[in-house]
Length: 176
Image (cartoon, rainbow, N blue to C red; front, side):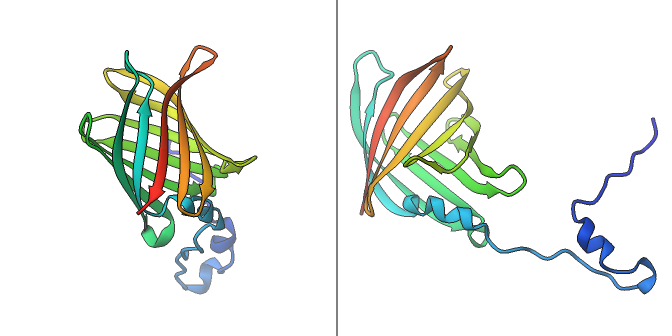
């Protein structure tokens, strides 16, 4: 097996300096993607009123969450503290200029994890879709966010079962 050369993802920069000039040119970090502003609604501290629709008897409760920018605003870290059943869940969300969508990663302190994507806001909804390894199996989820006002937003969570979206939970976020 012979080694294949991998083309540079920065052809313009590489080709902008003559090879025999002796000048060393490093790529520079670009600006934060303007698409990141689409996630500003999650920034800050919130109380969460939730309804879990996946249990035999519908249950309700309260939780908290906090979101902050990381990597100079290129990603947002969003941590949710859910007292019952006692999960600390963290999302990492950022714009992928390569994929032209949001890349979202999930993990929690029970060992669950998942990867998701979102096109961003479409018709008043910010929808995240992806797969998670949770509660002993792999499941596909859809989380649909809508903003109520500057201090409130809502998430409707669904589990994909075959071709159907089965309601999983309803969360209402209120800024502290």
